[in-house]
Length: 271
Length: 271
Image 1 (cartoon, one colour):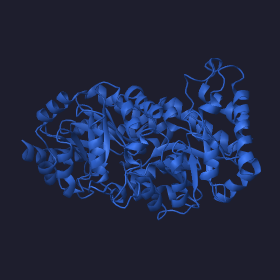
Image 2: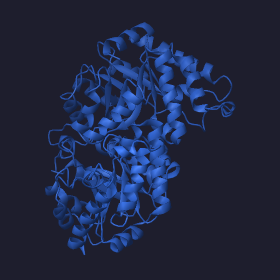
Image 3: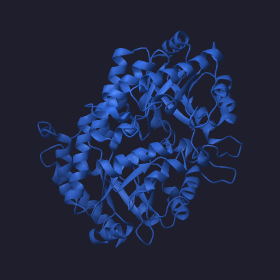
Image 4: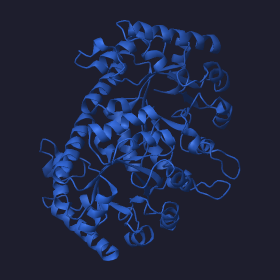
């Protein structure tokens, strides 16, 4: 998907909501466990219930990989279902991959060809040749980790060089030499609100994928006032706040309600 | 596997050789393509031919993941074959994973429970909670990226803080607060020989997984004289130099010969 189509969708739905599909067999409603593929059945229901409020979906690859071959089948069916039924939504393989060039190329094949995601999250530690193989695919995106929402972000990402520039800023600056804002986004945790403006300053035109609103404690209002740009410039992810609102038969309705509430808040602030 | 067993195997085989299983359907001998699972058939033959010379095997997960469900089946069969027939070898899932705590836990499940690898490579960018979930598994190892063998290593890993400490050194120091050398190794590229001694100084007791000897240009002799410690302390990986020596019927014999040559050089320098 290209940037123009993403922005058009944001304007149409008045939403920058990304729904995280961290689908855990231990957390989904029990009545689904008798289905032949409970994970896919759950995802399908969540997608159908929330697609009018969300512009992006982000399966967390670990949750599928941990279930082996069966998990990969569920993931594969989920992305195919999204592409077939909701071709307008932006899809993110939250994989946090990154390896030497010939290996990153293989990961790009996995997520852009074998499965047809629009984007993949990539860890920056290994530098340029771990990122560029993903950019060879037209209208496909790299979402590079900059400042993450977890506690461990404090271990290295905020380390400063002699000029007082934090590692996450160095990453954001350097990566813009490798790709344009048409193919490159950054992950920016909503739990680090004191840095939102610094990252926006370092990458004025880029879109940010923002996890950490809700369960992890980040403020939606702060993100939507401090991290946005003229093209909106953010995709705000919510996972637990949407997909696990109910363990009963009404889990999809509960997810729709939570997504509608978030979309309403987004529309109120952004439009 | 525990450290004592690893060292015992190194002494028995007079080898620190790790064979990389970056098995690419486009590079394996053509006569294997008619097999029902060419990737696994290739791996099995390479393993049988080289196991007397190697102490470790390292499947590169990207090469399997890029083939979807079929690839995961080949990977699964490969680790099962190793565990059943060569329980003394150390197995490495070269996955370079790393995510927030609850997600890293899922990756640990994938590589330590669903498949029974001894270790997994992890990227340090997300810090402590991306690493510790892997350490909850007894006698399982994290192999953390410190200084990698690729060109992109120069982008961030060598960045210095105000005290002149490079990021890779900060990573090596910090990570030793999270785990002992009984469960933690570091990746140290053989192509950066000028740093081998600095990393050894920062982690005197740790094992290092060393890629980059051979095809990538690293010198075996420099690694074995500058990066070792009293417990040998290195696993030297070779991939292209071993598994792709011949595209003919004799591919396994050619791999055995290359592995034997490397093992002979290792025995000569280390014992």
